[in-house]
Image (cartoon, rainbow, N blue to C red):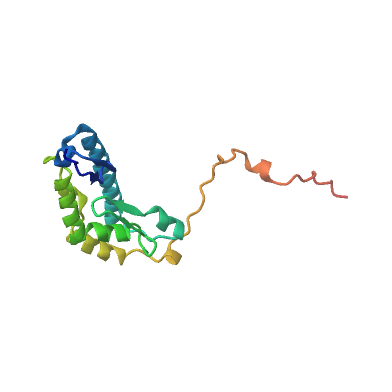
Length: 172
């Protein structure tokens, strides 16, 4: 009696004894598509800041921008970042990320019609982003944002706003 070795699938997050055939199962392909969609959404969000660099103003923003890279199996933290998605963009533009993403896609049976290059940021884009950052003012120099009034303006006449005065008394 042969005992089959278990293999762990990082996409499905479970063990299986199916070997390489597991990656062609419909359940694996469904979960894989969800993972790819989630990563692609984060890449698109990060690409927005390539065109529109923005300084982070507080620790809450830094924590919200954390990114889990399924390809590299690591969390990209923005706690040391001065710019929105700074560490994420640098990670997505790195050679290690590109290598890991290609290996991940091959190992997990990503279909040929999926554009793997969509999961990267080019070095040219990173260089342009760094240039654009030089033109963004410091946080203290940015114009204050005035709150928008939620109440409509009153439509009263000017006489209604003047204080009430008694009529003048006749001269003596």
